[in-house]
Image (tube, rainbow, N blue to C red; front, side):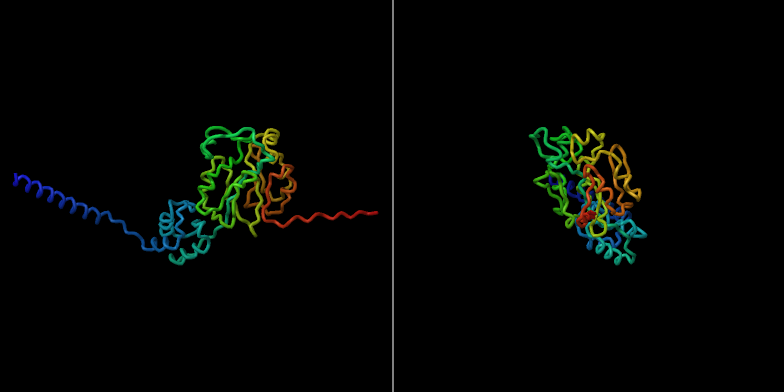
Length: 283
């Protein structure tokens, strides 16, 4: 009996030793040499792992930077220009050009413009509600206001306005990571250029119904009337599926489209108040 136990112990020991030797040589043969610069880059990144750079976390982005021959097209939206300058210094490269962006909510369906027609008494989750029905209002395109985007934001940059029940973005906190864009089932959130002095113009609506139907559902809806398109001198506005869209790479922020929109669907942010034209009355 003792002999059998000893034999089993020695056999298991020999097998374990053999496997350890095999694993050692395999690990040597297939060893992946990690560029030390990858770790250095990861140390200067914010560590948010938000995926806003387009890579799976900060580790993936750091590896992409070390493998790239140029940093053009690579950008950490959370760290911004300062972080990319540090990355460039580690690699001995020039930081690529990047455009500062921020999230905007493309819904202007306030409670007054888009009254509730029914009451949803279930789980307050936008994805779940979107799978069940169009929502509590006549507009099936608008913001539910249940806060999936709020919960997805790692920077506390979004809140639900208690008065309008629509999501709002705090541009001072927004890092344009894109987490909110991915989670919104209505595709209401878009990353747009911040613009000079954080001035932006965009169509705050995604309703693709025909004009009369869209207007009946929400008084602030874009009706695709094309008045804004005719006013634009820079060909920055297109009309598709009964909806206007402003290309922020072409827009020159002249604001003619915003003042011409009959439903006030075009939002202009951070501009000075318009000066009313003084009329000269001849007596």
